[in-house]
Image (cartoon, rainbow, N blue to C red; front, side):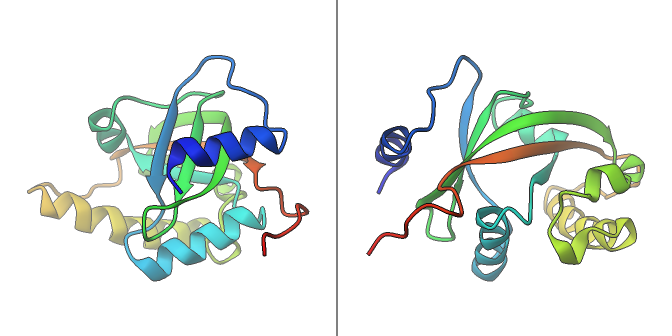
Length: 157
């Protein structure tokens, strides 16, 4: 199913139309396994925020804002869920605190753990571009709410 068909299905399930804002589709994680894990946390509402390097968002069309929606894709690039951003904040990597990590997946809610995971992940990405990771690298924290599918919706056969 493509993103357009998925959004039509979400609309049929009662998801209200967007009242402005942007719609983007993206994958979570860099591997199939990580993508599957992160999606399962979003779908069960154990993960209610995500993070991006500001540089990457700017390359992909600009920073996101509250009211924007994200269609998260699975590892095979098929749409799996729709979320709506309810809060966003641009800050330096070393300014991420407990308020920001509270909506992270359970294993990464501790700020020290979060920093270790993301420093390695973004460090690898920056290195591939001839850049070095540093504690002041600008990141965007994005808090969201799951719109579709809801955890209590009937499962498809």
